Image 1 (cartoon, rainbow, N blue to C red):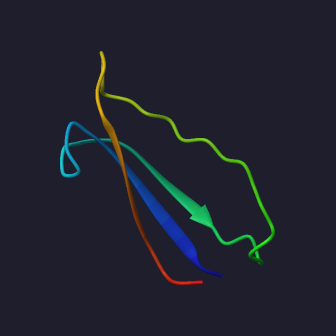
Image 2: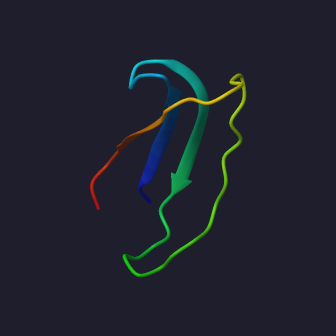
Length: 57
C-alpha cells in the first residue's frame, strides 16, 4: 500500500505549516475517496500552498 503526504503552507511554499494530511492508497487508479484536512494557526487571507510527498503509483 502506498501512502502520500500532503503539507499545507501559507505565504510561500516554505512558509508556516498550517496542516498535514496522509492519504492511504485506495487500491486502484479508478478507486476514489473523499477526505478532509483541518487547517489551523492562520487567520485572514493567505495563499495556501499544497506540497506532496510520496511514492509513485
